[in-house]
Length: 408
Image (cartoon, rainbow, N blue to C red):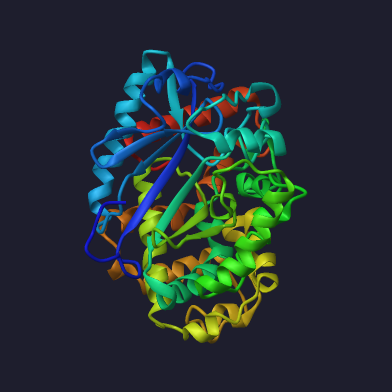
């Protein structure tokens, strides 16, 4: 984070981190090339205000902004330029970047390569404690959005709003309907698989929806202390702190003043990822300002209230039916008895249209008209596609990433 005389305040700035798979251009199988590409350059490759980083497996690579940005428009050209630049490098190896939340036919147990990384000592610990060659670890392409806050008051507002929004996010972001060449039964199969990465040590992920805590003291006691205890039981090596090990859908980093959402699947192009992040930012601003209901009412929701809706939205995305009138009330809908998640997002889009930039409006309108990316993929493939059909569709998605265009 760049040095400043004062911290960034509530939703004043943001980060985006996107993870891609590196695959063969011909058959789309994963290619473990990242260690070779990063050889001699350390854990990060920095290009201006952008950074590339190796993922856990040697076919995963992360792209992120290396300091908070205050304008969404400033990130678009940087992200798209970096994607094109790395794609040109990968072309020398007959490889390419593949978007979406999960590789559709990779079998991690036989194909994932998890290398030793001297710059990442925590990886050795995780290798001892967990089975890494599985979905949720080595087939997990997230788009992580990080939003700023300063102090307990701002954290409390942001955490309350974020927890409320989490259950419907897969309705906008789901892009992983296939695992190992078969329909996974979830439109957000990546997120569903991630729920099981830490079994049986549930302290690391909790109920996925973070606990109802609204100060740093409560956060450290309710979330970090159980993680610290679990790490101790696993004979954790020095250097792993509970904050790093927390893998809930939203994670607070108080030293940096950031709240990171880890729930969104990667989309078909970086402009779509940025548009979704901008839309989420606008909804969070509305919630934290009390546009529809007070922060006090937002805080009343427990994990057990929110988790069932999240689990259903992971399965059915925008077609999930919300029947809890109190939840709809949180977003200013006072007369509806029930509403689909897709219709709720359309309502929010109309409400906050003027808060979005022109490009974000276009991208979000496409998603809301045609459905989340997972549902658009299924329209092309059906639920029981052949391997050739999957390759044809996902090649098109790779082209969308290179050309920064939406998938129809």
